[in-house]
Amino acid sequence: LLLLCMKQTSKLWTMVTSTGTIISGTSSVRAAVLPPTILCFGDSLTAGWSPPHMERFPYATFLQAILGANATVRHKGYPGWTATQLLESADSAEGLRTLIQRETDPSISMIILLVGTNDLTNHQFGPLDITKSIQGLHELAHEEGVPHTLAIQIPPSQFQTLYEEVGTTARQVNQLLEEYSQNSTSTFVKFPFDWGRNSDLWSPDGVHFSPRGYQLLGESLAPMVKTILQLG
Image (cartoon, rainbow, N blue to C red; front, side, top):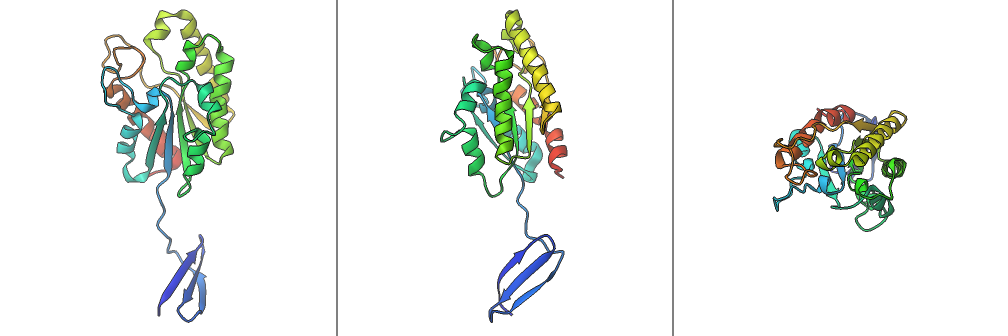
């Protein structure tokens, strides 16, 4: 008996033989399920910049190493970009909406957003402005059918310790972002480590992370990602 095609839903399967006979029934046999796709999106902290290293160390790479074959982790980071710019450019060739729509087999199951650091350097943006832009990125993802987003808080930095106003703005944005996540399908993620001048987790510029810092960030996300996506 030559089987030309087979179509299956969760309970019903249908086969067409070489003579055109249609055979249907129920079965526990299932087609191979592709692992979920995760997109890490943001600025240079997502791209993995770590001056003075020329090489990049995206935390997505370390997250992928933990998840293994259970998921596919991609990343896109725009060094120097604010959350506002990322939102305004969502429909560009490599913008967030375009990236989401491009992934169809399978579609993206989760987006991890780490944004807002560059907004702190723009005095035109207050806490509400920055939060609105970050929320806009999450809402765009949800509108495009992405079921889960993670909102990583704006990380600490040396810059925030040197300028009180900047540190205050960061804390206010993080508080607003956490409140937003409590009433949405986004999940707020506290940053896993503090700023420290003598810490081996930070780049000398006091803003980016060291390779070890990116590794720690990626690995710290793994348990939450596994729980939300119900990965083995």
